[in-house]
Image 1: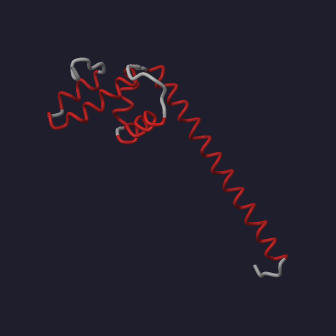
Image 2: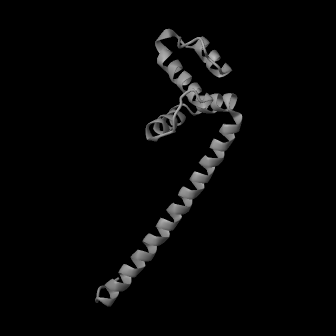
Image 3: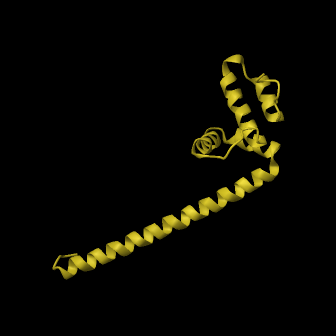
Length: 118
């Protein structure tokens, strides 16, 4: 059965609020519960990673509530990794910006050397 093994209080409360027509929303929450608790086995490959990222983007409140309720330790690790990724992306963007600026300065110098006006 799909609805007889709900683990989180968050989803239990959501199912009480939702009508039958919103069952796909609840089923999405239940799938995420299975991922958090390790019932969805296998490596977090591209497809599953995409599903989790999509779920987090579309349902951030639900993501936080379910993940932190069912697996607080892993959720803390997840947040730490996200923070590190964000910092790394910021550093890469800054490096790219500096590299582009340096390249433009070099091109301007070549332009000027070739007789061009700045």
